[in-house]
Image: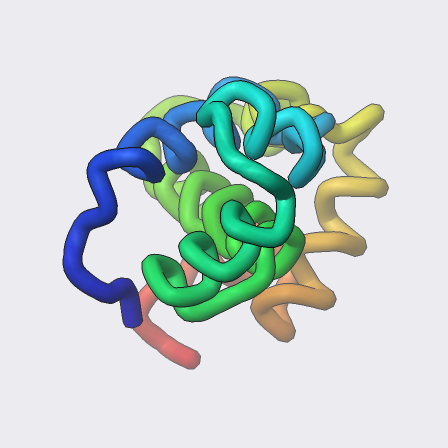
Length: 112
């Protein structure tokens, strides 16, 4: 659950979505925002309730679910948009995250 907005961190989700395959480092994000890494980590955890690594994984997974529900989008295209080298790598990752294959999720997205 995310806390109230922190104007300094408003663009962080967008940055993660732009670089799903290679999320920006804590040092890079802190430097972009003009604050120390320690201050960034403290504010980030307070705002998002997760570490930057955990949050990046969550953003990627949420985006994966959205892509899998997009009509007409092939699984390989979804894998490519998410920055995976190929469908097998994406399928293994998605199954680890969701407990189901991407195809099984597509068939029953509301079942968990």
